[in-house]
Amino acid sequence: MQMIRDTGRQRSFSRRLALLAAGKLALFGVLGGRMYYLQVVEADKYRTMADDNRINLRLLAPPRGRILDRNGAVLADNQLNYRVVLVAEQTGSIPATLDALSEIVPITDVERRRVLREVARKRKFLPTTVKENLSWDDVSRIAVNAPDLPGITIDVGSTRLYPHGEKMAHTIGYVAPPAESDLTGDPLLELPDFRVGRNGVERVYDLAMRGRAGNTQIEVNALGRPIRELSRNEGEPGQDLALTIDANLQNAAAERLAKEESAAAVVMDVNDGGVLVLASHPSYDPHEFARGISGASWRALLNNHRAPLTNKAVAGQYSPGSTFKMIVALAALEIGVQPEMRVFCPGHMDLGDNRFHCYKKGGHGGVDMIDAIMQSCDVYFYEMGKRLGPDRIAEMARKLGLGQTLALDLPGERSGLIPTRAWKTARTGKGWAQGDSLVAAIGQGYVLATPLQLATMTARIVNGGYAVVPHLTRDYVQGRRLGERTASNFAQIGIPQAHLALVLRGMRGVTNDPRGTAFRARIVEPGFSYGGKSGTSQVRRITEEERRVGLRKIEQVPWRERDHALFVGYGPVEAPRFAAAVIVEHGGGGSSVAAPIVRDLLLDAMKREQQKAPGGPARVAQTQPG
Image 1: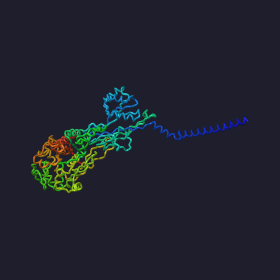
Image 2: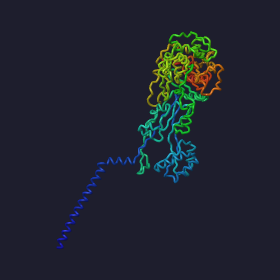
Image 3: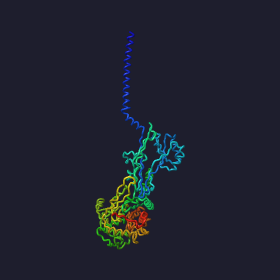
């Protein structure tokens, strides 16, 4: 009986053991199948995931393209940016380390708070920038004291350098960190040290000068700590950009304008439209923007009533005053006015109950067209304004580049204003009055122009009536050209050569005839004579009482109430090559204030051109389109 019971228990145990063995076999089968699936079927997938966790792909910002002048001088470059960084895990006490570092290089409270914030949110082995743009002396002092600065190291990056600083700021512009609106999904824009063009040609040609990002593959451990660099692709540097600007001439212009409170100047080639000078004063330091401008500096620029952030050469709109009279003269010739016709100037013209004064209180007497340009007789042009009306004047002004943007490769260009009958009706709801024509004929009233437009007007008059278009960019030094920009310069604007020659005689007399308004600002060196036209633009109406008792001296007039001083010029008179325009805000008389600046700029430009043509001033020949 006992044997039967033992045999039953043994069979029961054997069955259980068999079931357990089968269960284990099934379990191992499932595990084996899963391992096969993971290690064989899904091997590539998990190998990739492992590599993704082991290898970090990091972008490398490419070197930004340089900006060069017409002769190859560097206007914007990249320089090494030495910065001091802190690795938190390598220092015992961050505040103590910062205290020790501040005895070597100054660290502001703002910088200290920023560093502590960044350290708190970063992993301890990641570096935190403490201070940038260190001098070599700073780097040397930190290196010497390295044993006393645990966790402190020197890193090298890149920053934008503007060798000419404020003198080129409005033309070159500046770079700055991308704004939120700039972010397009391009990861390059999210790099902490990446900069984009924010103004000037830096902005217009930003994409070309950015280049293409490189990358580096870094092997990291499970905590994300870098172990070694596996590969590196440096990417493609940005394109270099060559401008038509002459750095030496631009600097000379900037230094000359710096003697005034607020001014602008343009010098351009009358044949191909290349702009050699585009200066605006006061200016600003572009490095402040590239490195991150402080709130105090930004507010100071915004609150400066002389508008240092505005490029007055392309965005300043001014009544052109008597520099507009060549346009009126050409329009008068077009309707058949004979240049020999004389108009008597007693010092004023009466129209109804209104009296329109000439700047010369006693009048000029009888003057013809050339005399009127040379002596800037207002009464003569009042008469022309009556005969022409606004629409004929406007048509001629547009031919010469006024009342429209000229598509210069810079942001912020403004169109000025050339009024017509339809414009005034639409703008004010009132009809055009004959008095409006008189005021417009001397470049006042509603008429507005930029210095760039006045230089273009002068170039089109003196180059034989070709539609020269101003431009700043020659080509990319590396890579594709910008394309031919001078094709439209060979188009005639439809003004007879005889009419242009008459106006040029008057402009030559302005500076070379003793009766000319700017004779005192003439060039006496043989072969370098120039012609031009002065303009004095009122910013407020002179009352009859002031005329009766006598006008105050300029020193007695508040700066904002003084007249604007303008002058346009060209040279040399024998074969015009350069045109210039200058505005000195609230400077006073155009012939006494602006004309000497134009004289100096044109003389400098002509002498530099003479050096390229060793035959002397007479060899500075005009290359008319033919």
